[in-house]
Amino acid sequence: MKILSVAIPCYNSEAYMDKCIQSLLPGGKDIEILIVDDGSTKDRTAEIADRYAAEYPDIIKAIHQENGGHGQAVNTGLRNAEGVYYKVVDSDDWVNSKALLRIIRAMKELKAKGETVDMLLANFVYDKVDASHKKLMRFRNVFPCNEVFGWDQMKHMHQTQYILMHNIFYRTELLRECRLELPQHTFYVDNIFAFQPLPYVKKLYYMDVNLYHYFIGREDQSVNEKVMISRIDQQIRVNKIMIDVITGEDFSGKSSRLRKYMLIYLDKIMTVTSMMLILSGTKEALQKKKDIWRYLRNADGKVYCRLLITPLGLAMHIPGRIGRKIACVGYRVAQRFVGFN
Image (cartoon, rainbow, N blue to C red; front, side, top):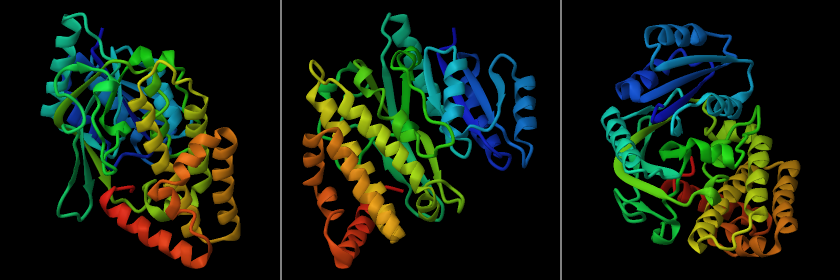
């Protein structure tokens, strides 16, 4: 059995998928690389995937599907994964190969000891175009390094820190146990991926290595602000699913630190959704902002009240045009230091 399955969702990715795949190849026969061609039609993505699969038959599989969006490509990868652990690497991102080899070695050592963790975490880098300083998301102040631990051993996580799909390796069977199924034709599902499985995670392992390079800078990229505003209904859909997850979960017997972290994460997503609607500025958008908060209140009044009084929540609810301007200024500051997008 492979120790690691890596899914690469690809949609018209000819221009950059080579760099992503090449960064993973040093993993050798310990990993399987699942190139999921999500119905690409405008370039040679499918052809490139098939070429790699033919050249590295023991490592790479090319999977072709009708276009279903990023989430469906992640789902397809998971259905085909045979590795002990599962990771997603977007086709315009890449990994540090040396860090990957260190992680694979740690996974194999854990397995040899009969120890399989539910989630392994590493660091990731915001590789933003034209940025002189690349922001590093590091967690050595939060998690014990190079040892198995539980949520109760998690220390305080700053507002500027958060776990994303980029630095997560899940135990493959855990994702199947929690019935993770991301929605089709929906962007921003990486937030669900980094959220829904967390209550099922009991054993964690953190390595202080800079693994994942998260590329930001293409004008058509999903996290581009104009693109986010144009796709706001998809952001709302993801936001509602996250509300359903946390308000529907029974946290009795689970770590209070786990729930606290999930509330902090939801707070950030509520802020992003609210802010995109404020920036849109239309009456319809402002009504949708009220609706998403009403959705949270109806789902769980206590969670609603808790998020309403956070600094981010308060900023999103200052009334009137002046209030919206203040919220915009606050968001820009938070965007710079917290790194929303």
